[in-house]
Length: 258
Ligand code: OOG
Ligand code: MG
Image 1 (tube, rainbow, N blue to C red):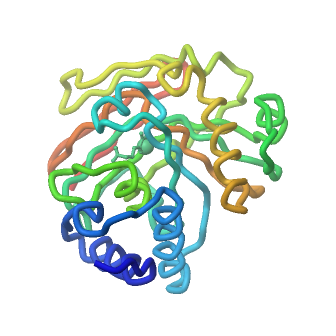
Image 2 (image 1 turned 180 degrees about the vertical axis):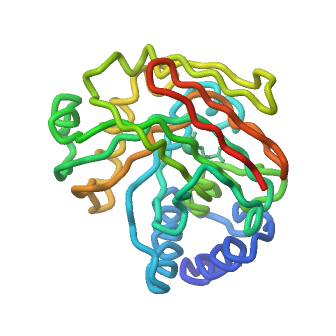
Image 3 (image 1 turned 120 degrees about the vertical axis):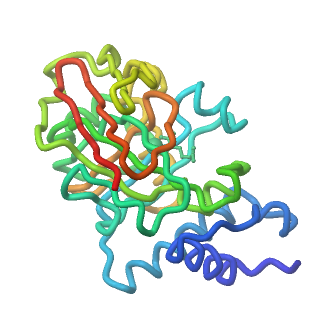
């Protein structure tokens, strides 16, 4: 089929907003590149923004080896975070979602702008206001949560919802690579991990985020959030579930699924 990025963006927007699965783009369109996929993502996000959603930050994805292996992709990706994706309370409604999964992440909140191809970890620390334990809810719009690199980028890196804990921390309070995470589903340990799963250290994920944004003419703006990527594998959730995520030294998030 002929490639029309705006019409593919229309299709994805429709599936995202009606919570219906679609067949992988790469099965149906020949020659879609990674750059095409980011353009589809941008066009799709513009539709939400035209409807009043605000861009509040960015998310990195596939930053851990475990996640890269499980989806058969070997490089990180990024997506947009919109105001409409943010949960004010740790309650996740299944409304508007297809087959959501949740994963523990460390979020950075920025006080100053970060851009350019040569950003270093030191620049990231200088620009960081605080770090916050977070949970991301991903909900691939593709059948069976199965996709290639190009598919998942076009689908805004599977973004659906996210929640930041109430308590923020100084980025210097402890080593973020050594923060241990235990995720329980209905009282049973479901996943465990440590911050080091995220590209060796979550700050590396922010460095990578800025580099990738620079390629597309974007930046981290003051006040923005960056989700640095899942620390463990994501787990499927269903109505009635309770997910408890303990971040050693950073408190816990208890998320109820309704
Ligand atoms: C892609 C999104 C991955 C993460 O933190 O690794 C992601 C997916 O697995 O659906 O958000
Ligand atoms: Mg994630």
